[in-house]
Image (cartoon, rainbow over all chains, first blue to last red; front, side, top):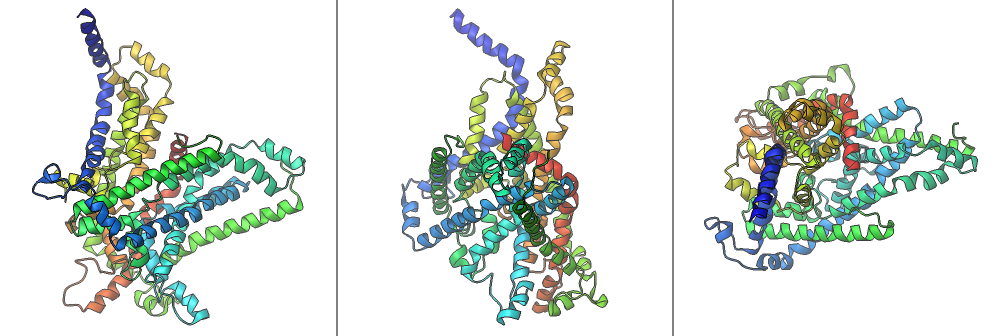
Length: 308
Length: 293
């Protein structure tokens, strides 16, 4: 009896002394519980036949009905493969470019030159995705500057924005154009920590520039490469809704309809909330599985260095 | 003690400069094209493409876009959303980051786990939308500002920052009889200007450039931020509402929307691109601190 009162008393004393820290934490905690955890719970709508009148709680359970509907729908193969292709191609082509840029920037010895080059290369990162896609439509239109140049050689314009076969490459190349410079920052920072003595000693031993990069610079940034790769691979299914949606035209839909845009159209445009939530949930589950798998593989390859 | 370069090295270094110059050109040329085109006579531009005759230069695109009520309203909406979002998200993150940096906060591990889980799992678009609707936040400013206000990355960033604040400062104030609130307000906050500045910049830029939340939560065109107005001009090829009277023919409307695209891009991107060189080092600092965890 005595003991219990004293432990309750200790908690009371602790809170009395430290309550202010909990006051500071409260806003973030409350907002997270409401806007992150409530929707996680709300995802059970995917297993129900949602009726707006009854609400999420009152609607009847239907098990995996919506998931089956998605898996057996004629759209499934196309949308699923579009998402995978766009993501994997993006990963393969976007991942190495920032590393190359950082290795190249690292060889620039004049600080002023390096700073200015970085200033230019980072700039597109600060342009909005709406403007980027707007620029794509301008530059790639049948009468736009790129087609004007092409016309000189081929005599006919290419329908860049309405041919499904071009969609992925336009998406990925413009992503690299916009993001590669900015993504190189983290590698540039890591390379700045390399001891110049190492390079000096290696060059005395007769190592040329490429050999020094391979044996000194690359091993330095390998842990960061692993983490960046895991994070990128973990996001593979959650490929950006924002840009794909803006780039969609009725003509390029066969390549540009991905899970994220499908969820938006079925859910918010057609109001089929439960089915759309099921598609979204399917996507997240695959995402988490991919993240865990890639983390496991990289850990094996990277001598135990994974994300967690 | 400079590194000695062999002949091969010198060739590779020359190649290196060549490739970097090429990369800069690839980035800069499209941007310069847009800026130059925005100062061209729109009709000439439409018919002939870029031309550099003295008589073809014109400010007509800018005049049209600056007298467009939707664009002007969108601009000020965006200023408001970005500033409000920056204030809310920085306040929430800095407070939480400070609390989590204090070792005497019992339950720290549980709270961190609660936050970090949300980086990997989420309810998804539909449940989040239904929640915002149930809270009667649809078509209100709050829908753009509040749901995204907690950013785990920001919390981790500020927690890392506060862990670097010397303990002795706080202990000395404690001995002098300052309360927790007093220490936070008078010692910690004045020291945290750098982190507040970095987070605020990031939040402002992020909100300025985003359109998705506004698109799904704000129906009323009067509330639309700049990016949604731009979307209708640049991508949906509509002249923004209110910029043209009904009796004008359809193709005139199309022509107008073509004309103002370039100046719309410049006007909307200018604020960020102008301030960015001055703030570059702060943005870089943010990336560095974030990457160190």
